[in-house]
Amino acid sequence: MTIREFYLSIINGNVSDETIAKANEMLASLDARNEKRKSADSKEKRETASRRETVLGLLSETPVFAESIAENSGLTVGQVRSALSTLVRDGKASKTEVKDGKSRKMAYTLPTEA
Image (tube, rainbow, N blue to C red; front, top):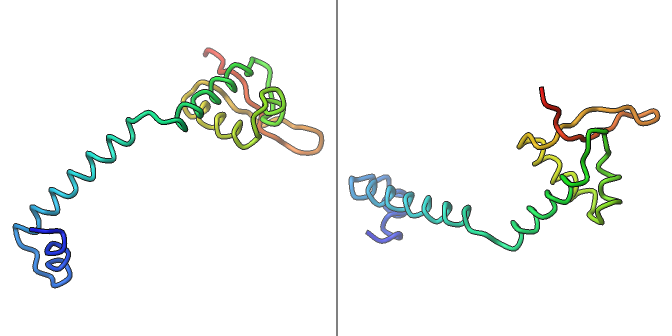
């Protein structure tokens, strides 16, 4: 069954065993392609990992704001915040709300051992 025949059988409401088999085949192919792409190394993934390591190297036990990390690392605030959110999600950094003047801002530290 060709993909055109598959689509036509779906449009016409003729879902046969052959149509279901073709759908399963197409889903397996899609899953394999997505898994290969997810595990593939790329320039963007290497750059993102490098930014995360740079940001992690600038963290300490004292709270620090994303803007100050950006100033010290040469990265943009957006890149730093993206790296920090990943580090927090992975448990490599902690975030706390700190009062800065009249406003409250998120500050980041290395996680403390409990």
